[in-house]
Image (cartoon, rainbow, N blue to C red; front, side, top):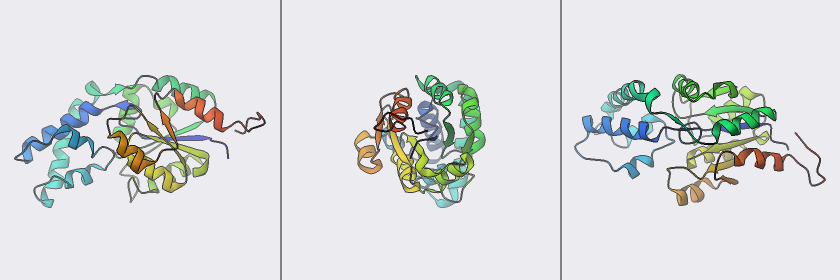
Length: 226
C-alpha cells in the first residue's frame, strides 16, 4: 500500500529542544530534589508524557502537579529563545509537501506548545494535524495518539510512516500499524532505540525520508503507486 502520510514526533525529531528540556528539568529538580540527576538519565525520559517523567523523581506523588507547573513555567519563559530547527527538516518537509504527502505531529507535549514550536521553526504550513498529550486518553507508546492522527489526516495507519527519536514513538507507530523510521541524530541511547523500537528505516538526516517514501511508492515495474 502506498505511503500517503507522515506522523512526526516533534521534540528531537523536527526541532532541537534538548537544551530547553534538560534545562527545564534541572531547574525543576533543583527546587524539589536533594540530589543532582545526570543529564543522560534525564534523556531516558524523553518521549514520555511530562507527568510520567516527573513521577519517576517526585519525592511524593503529591508534588507531581507542582513539579509540572514549575517545569512548564520555565519552558514558557525560555521556549522561543532556545528552540532550534534541525538541519534538513524544512527542506525535507517542503519536498514531502510538494509530493502530496499529508503530515501530522504526534507529541507528548500539550498541543498548544506544539503549535508554538512549529511556528517558531517555520514549519506550521506543512502540518495538517497535531495530536498532543492533552488530546488522547493514552499517550505514546500506546497506539491511540497515532491512530487519532491517522483519523485526522483521513488515512489508514498502513498508509503512513511514523518518524521519531525515541522507542516510544516507534512503538506507538508500530502498534497502530504504521511503518516506522528512527532519526539517527537522536539524543536517546541508540542501542536501546534499535532494541526496543525496532525501526523499519533509519534516517541519518530528515532529507533521507522523501527518497525512502519515493522508493516505497514505486512498484517493481516502476509504476508510481501513490
